[in-house]
Structure formats: C-alpha cells, structure tokens
Amino acid sequence: MKKILITGAAGGLGTILRHQLRGWVETLRLSDVSDLGECGPGEELIPADLTNFGAVMDIVEGVDGIVHLGGKSIEGTFDNILNTNIKGTYHIFEAARKHGGKRIMFASSNHAIGFHQRETRLDGDSPFRPDSLYGVSKCFGENLARYYFDKFAVESVSVRIGSCFAEPLDRRMLATWLSIDDFTRLVQCIFEAARVGATMIYGASNNREQWWDNSHAAFLGWTPRDSSEIFRAKIEAATPEPQWDDPAVRYQGGGFAKAGHFEDDPQ
Ligand SMILES: NC(=O)c1ccc[n+]([C@@H]2O[C@H](COP(=O)([O-])OP(=O)(O)OC[C@H]3O[C@@H](n4cnc5c(N)ncnc54)[C@H](O)[C@@H]3O)[C@@H](O)[C@H]2O)c1
Image 1 (cartoon, rainbow, N blue to C red):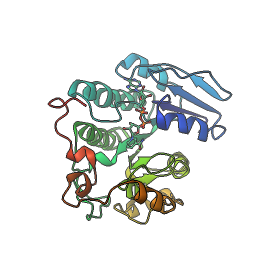
Image 2 (image 1 turned 30 degrees about the horizontal axis):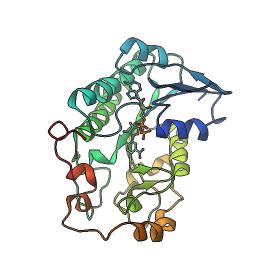
Image 3 (image 1 turned 45 degrees about the vertical axis):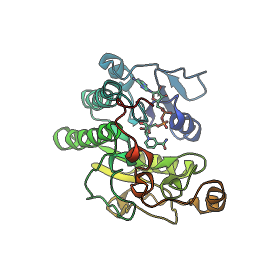
Image 4 (image 1 turned 90 degrees about the vertical axis):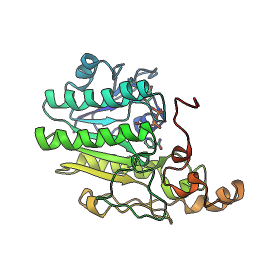
C-alpha cells in the first residue's frame, strides 16, 4: 500500500488517524468538505464533497486503499443522512469499483446494532438492530459493502466502532471504548491482511465488559491491547448509578436508542 485515502479527514477520527498513520504509507491523501489545514510531509490534501460523484471519482483515483470516515457521525434529518451517509458511501464504493476495486475500511457504528440489549453478546451472525436513521445508514453501508464484494470483488471491512476517544466519557463507554492505539492497529491490520473479502468487525478495546465477539474476524490478526478499566474509578465517581429500566442503559446504543425521532424533536 503506497497511497491511502482518508475521507472525513478533518473530523475527530480523521485528525487522529492523520497523526497516527504518518509514515505508515508513502502518502496519505486527506479529503473532507471542512478545512484540512496545512499540508504536511507525506500528505496530499484534496477537498471534496462526498455527495458529488465526480469529486469522489477524483479523490479515489490512484489510491491503493480507502479509509471511509466522512459523513454525518450522529443522528440528523433524513435528508442529511441520505445525502452524506447513503449517497456519499455509495459514491465511495462505486468510485472504488470504477477505479479497479480498492480495499475499503468503512466506518460503521455500534448504532447499527444499538437496539440489542446490553446482556446480549453479539457476534458475526447477529442481526442488525439499528437505533436511529444514522444507524440505518450504517446498515446500508455494510450491506453495500457485502454487495460490492459479492458482485464486483471490491474488498472491505466494516468496523462497527464503539466509542473511539482518548478516554471513555461515561459508564456505557467502559464497555464500548476503543482506544486510539487499538483503532490505529485495526486500520493497519485491515490494509496489511492478504485478503479480507467483505468482513464486519466490532471496534472495542479489551475492556472488562465485553458485548461483542470478534472470533469470526480473527483472521485479521487484530488483538486489542488497551482496556477502559484504568478509567473506571474516575467515571464511576463522576456519573450517577445506572438505572436499569432506562432505555439509555438497557440498550447497547445508549442515548441513541432512547432518543425520539430526530425530526420530531430537533436536537
Ligand atoms: N468517533 C466514534 O467513536 C465513532 C463511533 C462510531 C462510528 N463512527 C464513525 O466514524 C466516522 C468518523 O467519526 P468522527 O467521530 O471522526 O466524526 P466527525 O463528525 O468528527 O467527522 C466526520 C467528518 O466527515 C466530514 N463530512 C461530513 N459530510 C461530508 C460530505 N458531504 N463530504 C465530505 N466530508 C463530509 C465532516 O466535515 C467531518 O470532518 C463517522 O462515519 C462515524 O459515523 C465514529
């Protein structure tokens, strides 16, 4: 892999990977609609709107792989989700096909399965249970990934990212936390594997509370090393005891499962 495209490169995870992956490949091509700042060594900056297919064709041309992070990262209006997450993700897969089948890491989300209860251990065969239109758009992306592999041999790994931040921010994230280093190693495993087909993997660190079983994706060779346990005392001291009848506690998607329909109750 000489050149990797990162979409959504100005966002939270994009900014992290831009830093973490420096020097890993010859060139990181960084793209976003938002300002990407100054171009650093080993970087190419190409602004693009994912809703514009011609622009997406341009950013995908000449890359060996794609880390697709760009889009709406929380719940939104249907039009917003449709344009950025559904059309935008379709444009990425279609451009990859037209340019000769680049491997894609698709940033899916725990909100694709957010209406499973937290006592349910999920694995590679567990059904989707989206908790929001945002979650539905991630189910679409994962199905698109499956379709593009079965029909066109475009390889991809859909990562159902839990909560990727420097530290967990609440009690739920003690289970869903994905450390920055574990996420970085996962991205590297995805592009260094000989073959990935169309795979889904849950993105959580080696936390004490485990909701997700990744044994179906063991061939990727990713073993998360970090644990949220070092933050437990701090989080528990700062946040109230969980109320087990609260949907935000009962369901894996937390507040997304509890929230009403976005367009009824704009947030
Ligand atoms: N951070 C997490 O813990 C987490 C958890 C689950 C899933 N994810 C997924 O990972 C990805 C990155 O998450 P993040 O936290 O960095 O989100 P973010 O909102 O910080 O970044 C998303 C980026 O996408 C860009 N973008 C939005 N619409 C665009 C468009 N039409 N064209 C081009 N760029 C556009 C935004 O400008 C932004 O920079 C998202 O797809 C999100 O759904 C993240």
